[in-house]
Image (cartoon, helix red, strand yellow):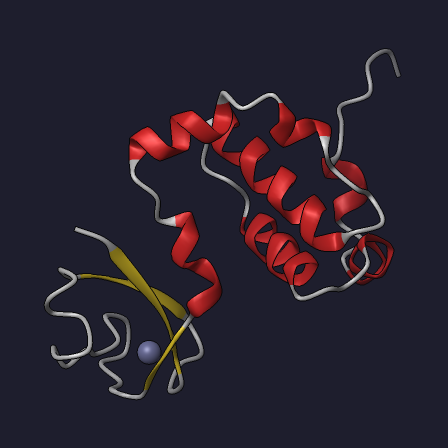
Length: 128
Ligand SMILES: [Zn+2]
């Protein structure tokens, strides 16, 4: 069953609601966090909720990493999401924010500057 993502207008949290395709648009949805009923569909995330098979296909596509254009935030967002999935770990909360902002067309530099804590997270330097 797919998970549909919404942003709750009451508590501003992004929430995922699991329902069947048939239920979607008919079922009344409420925020699982605050009970708010004013939920706004988050369209841009639909394609993330792929089936496992499709995810594996995407990962095995060598061109997926090859065509990253660093001047294109959307391209970088795609690559980041792929990397995140391949790591298979719980991603830090900033990860979603970064990819969303990239998808929205913000430049990586601007995002980095607004999130100074990213500097230390990028890599563990050895031998210091
Ligand atoms: Zn809420």
